[in-house]
Image (tube, rainbow, N blue to C red; front, top):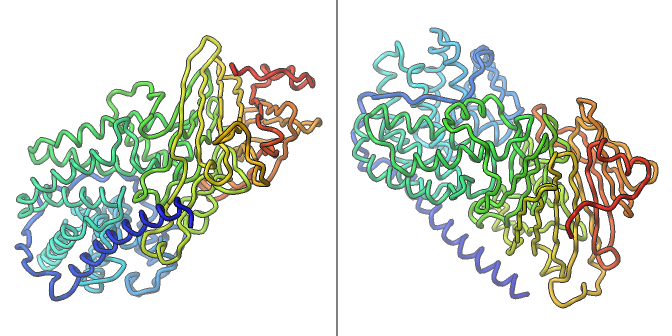
Length: 584
């Protein structure tokens, strides 16, 4: 076994042991003999109800009243039964049902019928699963349910009889106490931070929980400092994590103010850092760049969150802690993944997309990554996380990161990234002629002895992107003499862009929805147009195409290519092989 493999296995074993210990403690806390010992007195009232910033759809209320529960792309018709007694059609569906976020749809109607329906469903859950359920009492779902119940308390408790009021508060108190003892065993990253936020909500909103506010506030501050990086990105490197967290952090800050308690400095600082990063990841059409687990952008929720951004300034261009670069000039936006994979405990959704980029012009994206769908993510995750699903270089049809493949580890930990680029170098220059990014990563160094270097130059007017991919030996002055040097340079094209290969086979013409024309020029290399898939569409996966350049690194160690607006591309369209405009 190679030294690297031994080190990886040791790291995994230590991490698994710690995770297993936390899980064991969580299960011990769930034992009937221990679960509710020393339960504090049940709160006799709620003091405030936090605001819910997530979008509600009143048309969903009639479906729920009719017993049609449509979540995560699946529909279950109860036909007079309880949804909590029926076999869930998918794990995602069960998570959404048991998180109770759908209560917001009932509140959007705000009628006596919907209030009664909401109370009946909550009462059913308390009766059927309120004592214990393996799925429903997962700490991350308990956290989501606590936040949902507190936010929708006006819907549930208005005109409620005293018996329901007491059952509701008794169940809520039990869930808060259980989460307090199991929050540390919640999966690291967004789920753990949401668990701590749920406890902070409870301490602020429920009578009798205020004594826990000091310790919970300290936990919240520590976790925010750890998870929200200095440049405002999230430790998982997933752009979508920012919006998901802000949808809870903003009402939490309001809840502190409503109780006349100063919000912790770490909370204010985290929000102030995260807001500019929301703009960092946005293209001209308002959608986020598709990196590291990002799926469809919920534009209505994003608009709601951005309404709280008082600065509304130009987004930062360099995010070194998060590992991203942004160049915006003229009508063009270029966003590049320039970082190594996130730490092992939060890598369960991270992708192997180092040095991948996305390019957009005005309100249209041109070059993208495949992303992830909103539903059925587990079906596509293994495909979407691979390097081949990103607009970058693959070697020997393998990914620049290695994912956890051991079935025994995966059952406990998920599909983590166990190895990947360790050194990612970034150089950024601004010149009169445009912006130049020089990047490199060593993700293929151990296996194939190759360092991938990529240079990108976006012209000052944003109408031309010149690129160069260079393959240099990781050791010595020559690439290793082995068969493993086949490369593929991939550029995934947005499905709304019509792509056709030029007659000489060394380029492609791209027609945007606004009839703007761009060309892709590979100079001396032949290009192929192959099938791709755009997973992050609002209506689910869609067919797309990708431009691919194949070669062998020992024979072709340097590949030049250019995306150019049709005006700037006239020489290439006439067959003139203009040199790429990169300061090499």
